[in-house]
Image (cartoon, rainbow, N blue to C red; front, side):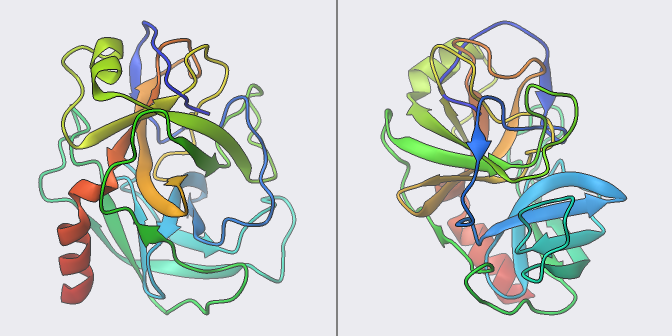
Length: 238
């Protein structure tokens, strides 16, 4: 997982991001989406019955699965949908990962139930020190992807500490979260997945060090509060 860390390594977009140092989630993340392109590619977040939010660097998506929990075991709660349209933010910069956010329109609407339900968007940024939850099926300490959805508790890191960890790389559209001592983080395969604070979506997994969960090197997330207008306008426009 990512919880306010700082370290020195190669930065990488987390299309291959995973939860490190986490634990199997309880079946209580009904907004979590699994994005597939031949195999698990990224995470995502359900916005409403027709739209899923993810990271713009997750640009190849064929299938979106809601209600997923165990990747290796089919479940009656799963709803498989085809991605009809991918809409990355118009100002997404693949080099800096600024504006790393994308909306995915589904070909047919999902049916809401206890296992499939959208999440509210945070309209302001959580204070440093706030405990939040990140989830995904990305890499753990093992090179094999976990079967069960993984969760990790992370703290929001102050903008100053975030800049200190990644000098010159953090914009106002980014948010850091991690654990100062390391050992917990999002990682490869978790990209586009949710960072949830107080029941609202604060961020989506964007980037971090290639070697995840390093001390003083928090994970970097796209800050949702900066994109409320774009999300709502894009969904209205269809």
